[in-house]
Image 1: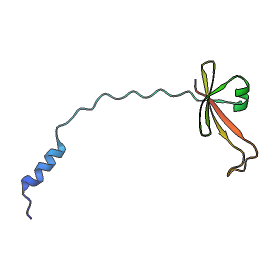
Image 2 (image 1 turned 90 degrees about the vertical axis):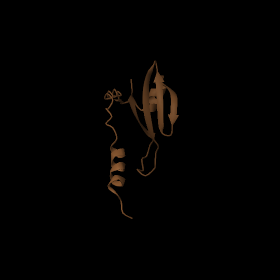
Image 3 (image 1 turned 90 degrees about the horizontal axis):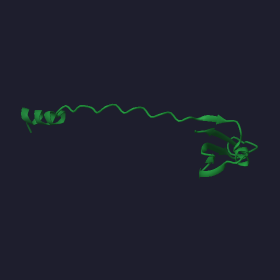
Image 4 (image 1 turned 180 degrees about the vertical axis):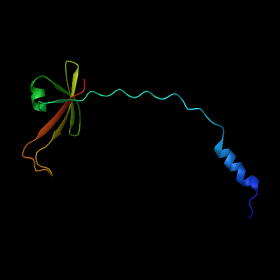
Amino acid sequence: MRRTLSHTLVPLILVAGPAVAQGPAVPPRPATTWVPVEEPMSALLNGGHRIVSASGPSFTLERGGKYVVCEVRPAGGMRGAAETTSTCHRVN
């Protein structure tokens, strides 16, 4: 089947279409403050923090409107750790 010039040009013209201006650039998101906490999660809980959210090994603690996010790593596992540890960070 022989294609004519119009059968070739029409799809190209439709694909090209009119030029559309881009919208204004979206401002970058502000960075989240992520400050390491030297205390383990157990010390934070004993010091008055309370758990306000938990999902798997991650916990969000709160005390006086300040939030700390902790990740708990249980003993054993593939690393063969002898004890459960936690890593915590202040987010505000």
